[in-house]
Length: 434
Ligand SMILES: Cc1ncc(COP(=O)(O)O)c(C=O)c1O
Image 1 (cartoon, helix red, strand yellow):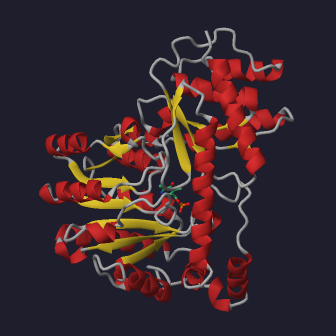
Image 2: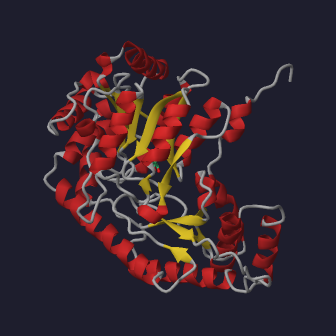
């Protein structure tokens, strides 16, 4: 090539949630089963889309308008509906013009960081959901900048660290929160949110809240949406239908701009995002048309409530399975549908030197995967996959210096759920033995 094709930052684009799939496929090729705990796709975990939702979509499929381009910002009726829904919360008021649709929230996240000037940083939580941290780091051409979520304090953010990092890194221009959080299942308490808004206001920062899991909360937690806390701070809420409806294959997510006119720089940034969508013409039409029809249906609220009760129940069941596993810490989750299980400090002090998966073929794969040095939790995750067929994501891949792994609370089949978590427990006992 005459010139370099790849920027340095592109090397930061990692997505272990999908990378691990290549290893799992090697297990499948041996004719062995794989239990997918790596990705937050309810459909893959046997979720059934309710018949009434399918009926709404079937009707739309029969309408010609579903097949056309829509407005670059998204279907007007849907944006007006979402603006009204937001305004009913009584916080920051918006109109349909403050909403911008994307092809999935992943698309929105990629665009969000793309238009920041080089050197400008958005500080986000660690463990970090890699779609945010990798994209931000790739753009900045360096490591992600993060504030710690503390597993010893229910995964709540370390606000002192956040404040100090903001104070001493003038290139930090925004704060990201993910509420409820992926990968920890933590829900930001209202008092923490108010303090984060105060930091944003003091240092004139942009606030970003990824609220894709906002309607997946349980255990009667006390939290607030970005619209309810932002006050006069320029802010962007990120929302979507991949998780709550659940329709990840629709590729449909959106941004809500709050206080756009409060700051000219922020307004220009919102314009750039809108222009980028205009260049692409628009995002997926049919799922946008379905949103108001689904969310206004009288069956929607009871459906969400029932789903949340079930997820909470799974969380409790999993915690009870690990009760007698002293090698790990398991926090109670209050939202989203993941839990991050952390290895205690001395868990790897006496790693089993004679590990075997019990099958020469999977032993060979495990040996091949672990040839190079790697974080201990990643090695454990490979052992778990090779020995039990359970596919999870190591915590070190979430830009964290803690050791552990992320699991999901999605398996619909209770018997299978118990089997999977008993397998994980068995692998921990085999791995952490002297
Ligand atoms: C916190 C968070 N934000 C965004 C996304 C991306 O969602 P989408 O499927 O709409 O691209 C995910 C997907 O898992 C997520 O966990």
